[in-house]
Length: 502
Image (cartoon, rainbow, N blue to C red; front, side, top):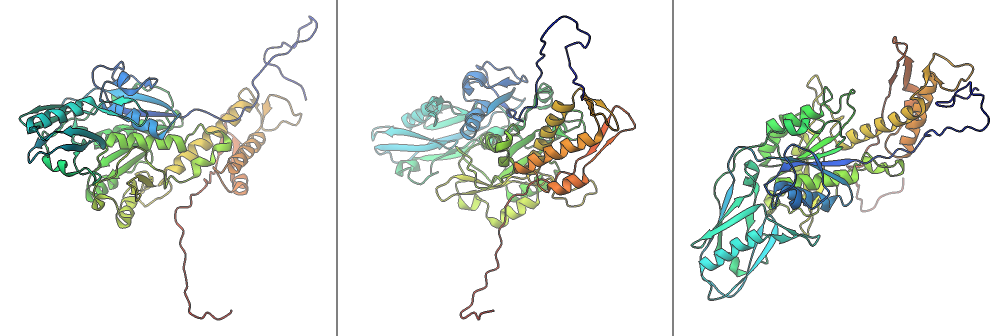
């Protein structure tokens, strides 16, 4: 078989030894990026609608107490070493949400405990304090912020003022998301009697939602396998749908960038069911939450971090089985569940949500939020018939991983090959449909060994590779059969008092 060269000419006469160095076949491994989409405030270094690698603590880049700074904090708790990017958004035209805390009642010495967005705040109270001084102390504590589990100081997404025993907490970011910020006085149950001094009420309703299209367009061709945002309104979901769509978006064969978006929606079971049945998008996951002390952007960022940690399309082949494993029982670190048991989805409610395209969670006995089933909003095929093909996010990630893996295999081995119907002389640099088919089967066998795909024999018997009517093109049909997940175990138990031998 003749040896071909890229740079050593065949007619050279000058002696003696020449060696060109080319890249050989390498193992598949990449680096999946998580993109966080959220609002910023003034004081940070990041500019709106300009994607940026998160290299410093969130407050420095996105402004003190901003939504995006909190998202970075939540994502990092759940994805310790993953590469995180951010798409900063300016506040929309709108109104900032507010809450009021009124101090009234009999004052005694002790410690006043309350929670801001699920973070514990403690204030010493003297018997000689007045409602005015206590309110001032509450406002000061809110403005002072909290210490994260990483030991760093963070600011609350509120600014606070006080007057005559009344605290007014105003969301730092304008918009509807501020309506989901929380101040609680009886979140855990061990706050003590001084919590009775506080009456917490909703103030001004926040309005306005940022426009996503300009920022999404600025992402260019950078791959983001995980995207997390807190917006679940129709306009925002449609923008992400079009951005990721099979036709013209990141899943289009002309793009091959892929990616999946997760968001969180706080609403009632009925409204979540309506939201889910109004969507049909395999590339978006909506986590349904009745309410929570942790705001939606923390939920979305935490979920995005978990997806990055466990559905990383850059996994080496030896680790790729994690893409196939279900996400059930994974804990969303740093996220607080709904305070009341009645607001924590029971089995019947979760069953309803899963048929309506909404993801859900369970709560452990010690109050941790644990993923139950993470699904997409895809429910119907092109003929509006029920279709569960893309119900679970694992299917999309397995498919994207398989495509990228085989793309690397074919590109590395055949990038500069000539194409012929057959190659009887075994010429180097010439490939045939038979050769391509053999390499595809070999690559698929590796995906099966890695736990991403299954049924190698079926794939081998059904894969088709042929030279197109365009003589410079090879067409292939790749019948992927992705690995499944053990989600349900059912047993029929027959109990007898005196079972006879068979």
